[in-house]
Amino acid sequence: MLDTLRGNRQPLDRPPLYNDLNDDEKSAQSATTAWNDTSSYSSRPNDMKKSGRVSTDDSLSITGTLGTAVKTYKIMATSIWAEKLFEIQQDDRPILWVRNKRTFWHGPQVNIHTDSDHGEIVAACKLSNNCSKQDIRYLLGNPDCTDKATWPIATCGGWSQKIYSFEVDGQRYRWKRTHRKDLGASKIGYKHFKLVDDAGVILAVFIYTRALWGSLKKQMGTLEWFGDVGPKLELTSLVIMMGIQEVIRQSEQAAAANGAGS
Image (cartoon, rainbow, N blue to C red; front, side, top):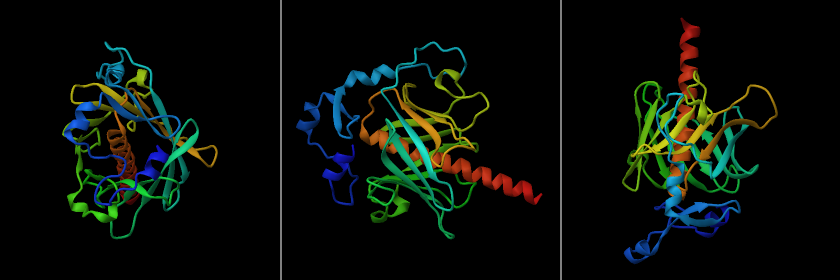
């Protein structure tokens, strides 16, 4: 993936990674693009997308069969101070870096970088400074080259961050909170999410695993992919999930501040 990012520098007014295809090229493609273990693109048959089809019911008994994850990312916290930093690791090697930025006058912005935490920004999401406004604006590409008011929106369904809906190439997807034990979630946890498409197929699962004690690089969560969704949806889903976790953290801080002031 990193080699592809470095080798495909595109104009800043279009997302990196994804080349436009003409109609002939589109019809010729019989496989979806994925990131493989050597940080480059590979192709797998389209029916791999079906391998992750499982029940989306959050009850403990399921009717579907949970497929084997095709890959797993670890999200490691490398700094938890004023500017929070994370590494996205695959096979214990960093492949992307995440920086949570915040200024006094503006709400938090989550940037995903290549090469290092100061490398090229390939995706970003913007949160409101008002904790009661929980929608997330997001963008693939350089966030400084596009008016943030025009960014697409991942819409929060409900006040408790249970569902975030967004679209990629006209298809609707949702990050939904889950308590399913077979997915690795806990019954009382509220930071675990599953990514589902409009047909209800589970494509990925994020499990929050942050521990209070341990090494400097604390694991914040794991992200398992149960199908080959392609780089555009993968990167979009990742930046939105990092934004969701930041929204939850802000809500926790606001609740703690209100409790202390009462």
